Image 1 (cartoon, rainbow, N blue to C red):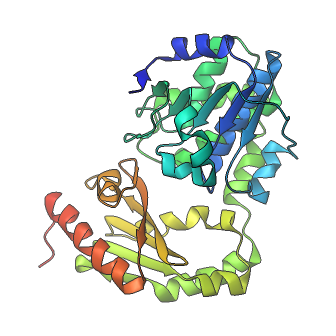
Image 2 (image 1 turned 135 degrees about the vertical axis):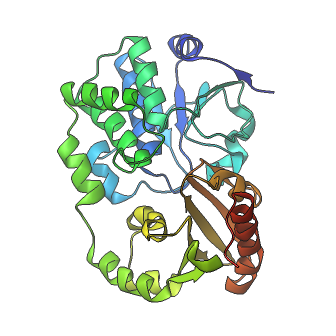
Amino acid sequence: MSKMIDVGAACELLRGCDNVLILMHQKPDGDCIGSAFALLWALESMGKRARVECSDVIPERYKAFTGDYTPVDFQPRFVITVDVASPQLLGNLQAAWENRLDLCIDHHRVNTLQARYTLLDWDVPATAQLIYQIVKELGVPFDNRISTAIFAGMVADTGGFRYSSVTAQTFHIAAEMIEAGADHAMVNTVYFDTRSRPLVELDKIISNNLEYHFGGLCALVTIYRADTDRLGVDEADLDGIATIPRRIQGVEVGIVLRENFDSYRVSVRSRDKVDSSVLCAKFDGGGHWGAGGCTIQGDDAAVRQALLPAVGQALREAGFNWE
């Protein structure tokens, strides 16, 4: 069983380790990437050897704040996961490292990793905020790279500081990172002001695929592989798609289904009354109150048959009645 520790204890472990492998979750997002690289550069500035690995390629758009990365070759002696809530999220790295994890750093309410030590704080809106605390406790200076990576991670998991999980401390840290040299304009341009042409074309398809359930309390969009393949949509371009159904007035639960061969990746976004993480946990997923995800095996019809009754139940339990 993993031992729960605080930031101070995590820093003691980091001071005493070397040859550090930092693992990200599959299909890494901005928080995961920003957290991993900020920690990488902090450890390197302490004179330690470290590298970042992921089962998937880092999306091109995020190289704006990671740069071209060439990992150092060494035999790992200390293995860390950042922003990884379950072993399955390690992808094809799971078999090699699941039973060799030394430290888990995460902010998801449900975490099933069994590392030797776990630093878990679900009150922070992004793992990058935990990495900030670690870097500060270690006494590592916040240079341009580290501060930009931390800022990018926080922006990613807070939707640009819009979600209810954001606290006053989040804004204080963001301001400190800007003062330290974070390229906040570049980060916001990457996230919010740059849309590829294929994604613009996909927006038209999404509008046509939009459907409503439970008296309009749930909006659902399905994205099929045939469309993304035909348009050449980059995986990273789909990061912000999950929030689209929830933006609609009157919608409490927004769902995006993304076809993936014999299964569908399900992204759930909810407002204040429905816990997305609890809903997704019914399908071996997880996440946060307002944002969760899972994977459901089967074709389009089978996935809907499994998922929609659970959504209806969650809405009823939250006090909604549409009949």
